[in-house]
Image 1 (cartoon, rainbow, N blue to C red):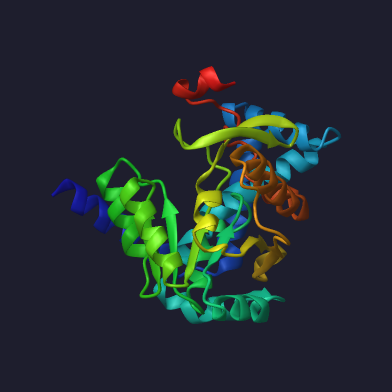
Image 2 (image 1 turned 30 degrees about the horizontal axis):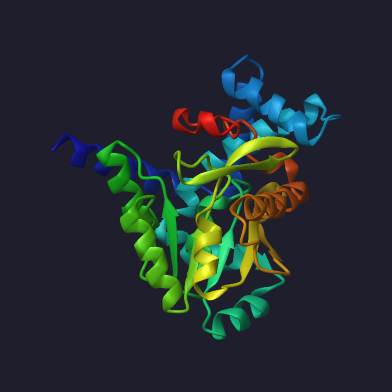
Length: 290
C-alpha cells in the first residue's frame, strides 16, 4: 500500500512540474547546480578528479558547468517524461543521421546503440523508439515504488526495459535475433564476472563485456550515440558515430575499443558527462584480476 502511494505521489508531482516550460526547469536546474558547486561534496571531488584525467587543464568553470548540467538533467525530467509534451519533444530533437539509422535497421541484422551517461541520456530510448522498436537494459532500483514509477513513465509501446539480469540478457538476445535495436549505457561498472579491465581516459576501468557478446550473435553494427542538451531550452541534438569495424574477438581488446568510442562521444560535449560517477571502482570479487 505504501509503495503504491509513493508511486502515485511521485507521478503526481512529476506531472505537475511537467506543466512548466522546459527552459524554466533547466534554469532552476542551473541554479541548483551553481548552489551545489558552492559546497564541498564527495560527488564534487570525484567529478573534479575524473575530469582531470581526461582534461588535465580543466578549469573550475568547466567543473562548475558540469555540476550545473547534472542538475539540469534532473530538473528537466518532469517535462521530458510528461505525456502531454510528447509531440513537442519531436520538434525539440534534431539529428543528421536518421537516414543512416533507418537503412541500418532495414538490413535486419539488428543494431546496438551504446552511450555514455552524457547529456539527456534518459530520453535516448523514448526518442529512438518513436521511429524503431528498441530494448534497453537498466539496473533496477531496489525501492519497489521507484521501479514501478520508472516503468510507468519510461515504457512505451515500442520501448522495452529489461533488468540487468540473465532474464534481461535473454530479452536482448531475442530483440537482436528479431533484427531490432538494443541499447546500453556501458560506462557503468558491471558486477564481477561480467567485465574485464580496459583503459578509460588512461585509467584501468572494469568494463562491460556484454556488448561484445551481443554483437557476436549476428555481427550487428554498433553506433555510439549521445543526446546533447542545447542552451536556453532550445532542445537537443542527437549525435551518432558508427563504429567502422566489429569489436575484437578478444574481450579485453573489445572493451578498450568500446571505451575509446565512448571517449570520442564525451569529448564532443565534455561538460555534459556525469564525471562524478565512481567509474573506477572495482567490485570486490574482481580485485584479484587487477
